[in-house]
Length: 274
Ligand code: LIP
Image (cartoon, rainbow, N blue to C red; front, top):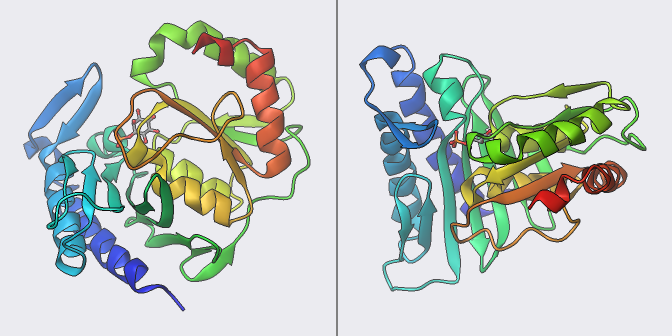
């Protein structure tokens, strides 16, 4: 049975998703701002976040919020042990180009750790959910990471984040090593969906640098609850995801592939570039 908090998160994700769907045929009319170099947000990101926060706050007013658009907000009683970590539109660039691959991502963190996660893809009506210790699901069916034993023949998702252009040479060296054994590389443009797809066994692994808490908080729980492993480029645990923190790195996959990918990232010199 789904936890009450997850039901609220699903309701909130659907509310945000409806706003995104409603605006996607009016892209030309959207106000778009460049938050950082080649990092865009539109008024739809903000509207979707308002809708998501409204649903969550209606049920749990005392919880804190960390949203991509609204930043950090305290709960109704001040500081809280629980934080909603929200990306109302993960894959904004895809959305603004009309490229149909984006989602809503919501995690509930207890202290630094995600305890519930929801990633919702409104275009495919795919709902990924996970709760700590209770497994991960896609549209209520249990999902698991792949059983592949190593990187040989694997499909690996990654990203070329605009903020990471200074490390592009090291990233390409690393990719050359990955590609010498892997079948192929994917660049989907939504970290939350990249993680959800690893959890669902649709891709074998994923790595990216420059992600923010809201990009990965729900997805990393999905991967763990689907039997996978999530680390940074040095093989260490990801830091607290209830706070905004620049420049995180993430590796996700089944235990063996995550370890193999981490070793490749280290051996190529890419991990040392941070
Ligand atoms: C996006 C990430 C994506 C990354 C983009 C961006 P946003 O998040 O999920 O993987 O490559 O550059 O950070 O900004 O669409 O929420």
